[in-house]
Image: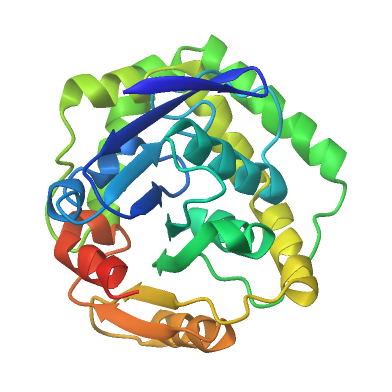
Length: 275
């Protein structure tokens, strides 16, 4: 465990294992320990780098609104701190919202990218800019301040985390130790961070659409790992189109909920090792 300052904010980083470098980036509001089921299976084959974005996990309070370019640059700084500099290409693994971040990194830092794995990634086929973004940001900030002052993070943060994890899995509850959940999810910094990431989601989707039009992925190996629980195949079809658009291959993890790393960690490992 270590911390590195990025734009003045202490960012929490964990490094495990040996071999080629792989960085795991978690989805909206998630922490480094959400990859715990994957790491023991992957560490014998890869140097596994995990980190918390500002406000999440053990990282310090966010000082700026999240942007797509900023998150791609954060991954670069995390890799630098982990000893994987410009001469050490890494496989980027992004879950959900972090799929945007990892794809942006692959486009902006192709010389540092060995492969791209998108784990049930967010998909926005035709994103549109927000209306009145300054007003929306002000409302988001005010909401976070009001809820924090009312003590909502301490009172409800761990409970809401547990509820969200159960909803995001095919079966099972939250395997994370309660002391870690309480430490990461009972704070105002977490509340502000998750509201900011949610509020700026559409902006990052628009940024990525623009980046796709300007910067190709060339021949980079790409794997899209889609979760499927049965029933409607609409989400699976969207993941398939994403894989085709990126010139990659589609793998399906079934049965699995959105939190594939918890439901079927071996599928995540196989996708990484096969990319």
